[in-house]
Length: 190
Image (cartoon, rainbow, N blue to C red; front, side):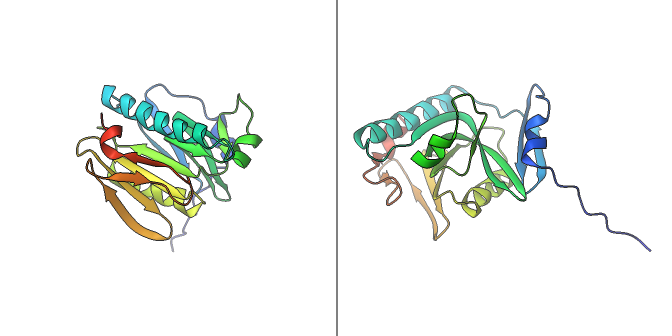
């Protein structure tokens, strides 16, 4: 007779206490640690992060009544505590409420971003990105953009709609969650 052993789920606090390992990216999905070799980021990846963050920052400055903040550089988000889910985003817009709860020296925002942006890197695996996107949406992120530098496209995911793909000839918006935001996709890929 065999016994089924349930995996032991890690908490967000246990995850945060793990020692840093050079060359390893980690995230926590529903209590299970995911580990892979550090994402290979190249000049193009970095440029896209800057362009997207810049355009979002311009939008936020034009709408000071909305509040919140734009962050980039694998900023961490504790999406859920039970089971624990902790992920990092290349670029994100965080609403005023979640932003206000976070100190400047925090390593994780406690809650989901309104918008999470993931930029495909040469080392990214589709299955892992799909899982991450599902967790964002399951835990309250309103919009996820998956940016593909090779094809100059952005796929937009929402919990309540089918994915939409935008190319260089189109304008991307984030209505109704980022009111008034619009950017020519060609501008992002300049």
